[in-house]
Amino acid sequence: MKYIIVLGDGMADEPLKEYGGKTPLQMAEKPSIDYLAKMGCSGLLVTVPEGMHPGSEVANMSVLGYDVKKLFEGRGTLEAASMGVKLERGDMAMRCNLICLEGDNIKNHSAGHISSEESHKLINFLNEKLGSEKVVFYKGVSYRNLLVIKGGNKYLDCTPPHDVPGQPWKDHMIKTTQPEAKDTANLLNDLILKSMKILSDHPVNKARKQAGKDMANSIWPWSPGYKPEMPTLKELYGINSSAVISAVDLIQGIGVYAGMDVIHVKGATGLADTNYEGKAKAVIDAIKIHDFVYLHVEATDEAGHEGNVALKTKAIEYLDKRIVKYLLEETAKMDEPVTFAVLPDHPTPCATTIHTKNPVPFLIYRPGEKPDSVQKYDEISVKKGKYGLLHGTEFMRTLLNHN
Image 1 (cartoon, helix red, strand yellow):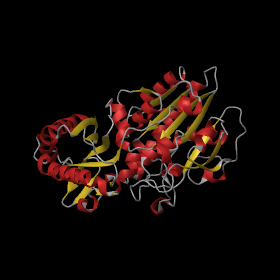
Image 2 (cartoon, rainbow, N blue to C red):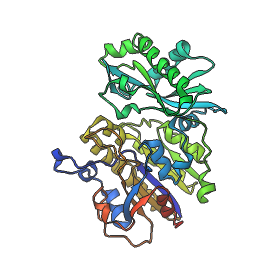
Image 3 (cartoon, rainbow, N blue to C red):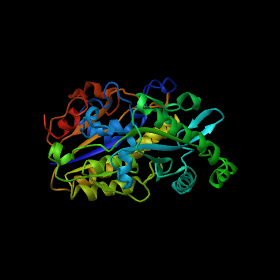
Image 4 (cartoon, one colour):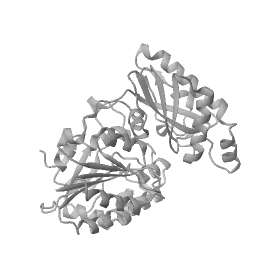
């Protein structure tokens, strides 16, 4: 048996009054995903343990069967792995967004989804002006970059910028959770303030302003940690060969630590304009030579952060029509059976535009297994599913029949 997980980041939502109390999953035309729900078994999954922030880093590790309470070391460390940045003992890595400030408030977490080309110029500039032997910025994808502090202390209270759009940035500066981290917090807050002074006048931002685009006029570091000690999927679950396909550094980094082959797809953007067909083909090519493939699609999450219901619904339909339909057609031609799972990592409700900890709907289609009574895939329908409510590592064990 082979396994494919199709994960629509932030795909789950909440009922929207202006749309008759329906969610984007309920409104979307998704015949292929609904077919899998009808032929398989469904349930709800808690991906974020109590006391942890509902970030994609926590939720995706949880979906892949990791005990995040024991193993999680911050988002930055995972993204460092995807970038090939080797962390030494005492190195503290953090995600470092390029964000847009408007007056005293955080306008958005992505600097208007700045291009990687523009972002790289700004990161080089930041290294030139603010970098040192202790402080190093690394270029990532679009607004998602990396900051490494040599000898930094990870016991910090940081706010993800996508959680506080429209709020005063001063209210969310970095604080400490332990007194020993005070010097690190002071250093990071100083870097934030200095970045605000120098970024606005950079030619990249002047050109963006002239074009009516949001400027990348501040950095925003968050999710600190040290190099994690993660076992591979082979060590955890006996999966001999696995692959991950994603446009997002974070997911690729999880794949590196999980011992997965990281497959890059040309034109994969992390937005609704991503190369769906290229990702679908990459999954089929990968499943022919791997036992397990994890496909991550970011577009639904970004639409949720924008509060764009129509775009989120369309992104779900693209996922169904341009990926899942093809996967079903192509795997049907294979000699070895393939088990499918479809789910999000966490909800990103359009009404609030931030991640929540609510359980997410999932389906598992295993050839030859008797289906349950669920006929459609959405947040409400799966409540009648066979699997009920699962937590964390229970999903992966259920998928692999390790219960």
